[in-house]
Length: 211
Ligand SMILES: [Zn+2]
Image (cartoon, rainbow, N blue to C red; front, top):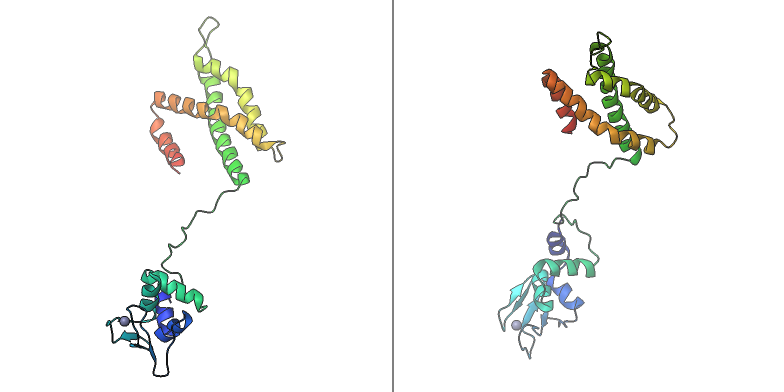
């Protein structure tokens, strides 16, 4: 129940008037606090009605007028002063947050991402090493062949490192490798596009990135 319902159900105008110091005689009459009242002219029971000024209302109206509060503030004041519990359903419900990832989970993901890119690259390099190998001694080396020679063992080593079960200082290893991985991903993309077979791979990649 909200605060209005709780107060209306549990507290009368008479109770709040007495609570806040209005004297009520045996006939249920009090001097009206809302106009200059010499003789009691306000009838107070479940609701109140003033025969002098015509003011009327329930407990919440009484308190709102008496203390100069908004109806809701008045209801809350009554609930608090009379020890009533209510559901604060008008409060904004707490936003549902996605469970926060632990640093460990984030690191796992980064590591996995590095591994995926590096292993893609590794397979390309191996392919380049044979595909673009010079056919003769005096043929100029294809840049992909050069790249393969330069990088293949380094990438192999990085993959091995990422596969290790207990990498000492895993965070810094992953971050180190991760720095290069972005440009490697770009390099792979560039190559695939130049080969015209990018469509399928790019689709897979953009789905991965859009998460
Ligand atoms: Zn009055």
